[in-house]
Length: 147
Figure: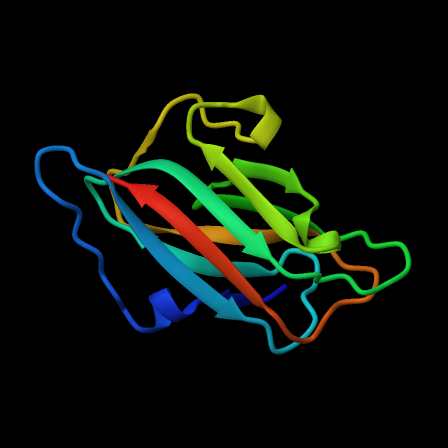
């Protein structure tokens, strides 16, 4: 298991949301340089104390080039690694998974309401199931809706 960081985390690009309850979107990219393994964690976006996460969208290329792809991805934070997107197979052929943080089951979210943070954290992609044959290039992109 390894932990990697996206360009947004590495570049310390803090996003300051707008006043009066307006929402903003953070965009982060992670360039894959080696095949991902089970339990790898990619820290994609910062989230700060006092902020609330309302939704997330993750776009992935084909991360599993084997004949029987197996890779499964989760999106979450801290001790809730699969709370925003749980069990996504988008990395098996490439695609997009999204979830509003309101527990919408068809999107794999287990969050029951927008998630308010009382401490700084990161929104992470966790490899739940390793790829059968891992791709060694490609870019993960995350769009995080925060307020």
